[in-house]
Image 1: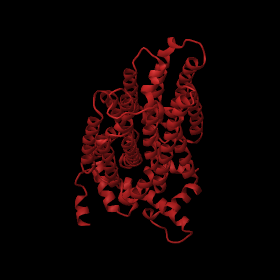
Image 2: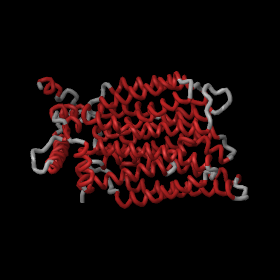
Image 3: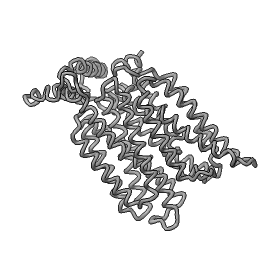
Image 4: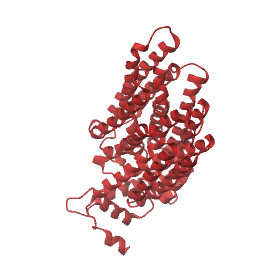
Length: 482
């Protein structure tokens, strides 16, 4: 206890300083840049492996299996994440996820068969699911309210920077060299994560209030964090009340002992928890089955099918660059515009772009009309679609998960949503390959389904989602429970 008392005020300045807050954000940013190699690896590498002279020969069926393996790994990530996050804390859980990611790249570095690649991609999806489930929650809990949205954008911006990097360099490197670069980056991220503080919310949840105060002082760079600490303790108190209700009037159980069945009961019986679950489920459905995941994984093949004058390699790089620039732009406007307007605009415009792409493919595949003069329009629609999704849906997916889900069920709900996302992502990729190639229906059919999913999800989300900009966790929960 004396050592904790001596730590108080150690990092304080009269006006406060966010240095440690920024360091924690930068450390997670490096981790997200490295994890961006996981989805970014697919499009250029699978295209390269199908060419003559490939070190590992693969066919169309192998492409589908390798791509789907990542989604299935992503789906099973919550199995481990939900068991360790509330017990070990978010910092240690992130380090475990990094170790899992390293295993993936180690296998790819020595892979000589398709089966090894499938196993490696399953592990990569598993690791990505862990990191995307833990890191946004961590950032949401260490960030100040005023800059929480902008800091949440770090996840999306740096991950997309990693994707762009892979799109640019992978075609010029061997599969093994890419694995070595990825291992180096993930190791550097691990070294930074070792020094970040634990989430003050986690420390309070497990009864370590004094440590939570020290961490808050460190993060805010000031000695007076009474107001924020009281807010965290009030949140924990609300969780205690929920635990008492679940125990039917017996002594309340501390949030750290909340069992899975108790958390499920909280999700089902508490109106705010139900609403938050459906909001995030709809966002994930749109994310995975609204065309985004298929475009990012199979963009090289989609651009080839458009028969555009722009090469598929160039189009892929432009697509990723559009995504990155849009994310950077969103970081400056997300805490000014708000969440609801960005979701609404993103959904309407994305659906319109997907419809243009659907019509273009339909004219090419089912009519005798020469659609080649409109190829540039279709390619631009693909770019605009990714731009509007990167301004709205993609960054808000992680931000809304961290803002709307109550702390006492956050780990379970987040990981259920992530698990569903992995299942939906794998289903979307297999659906696309099945309809477009195996059944021979072309690209227009799956893109029409993506269009309908996008518009339906957007309308449903707008009906349920309150504005969360500038509100504390407690304020958001009270609005959701009305």
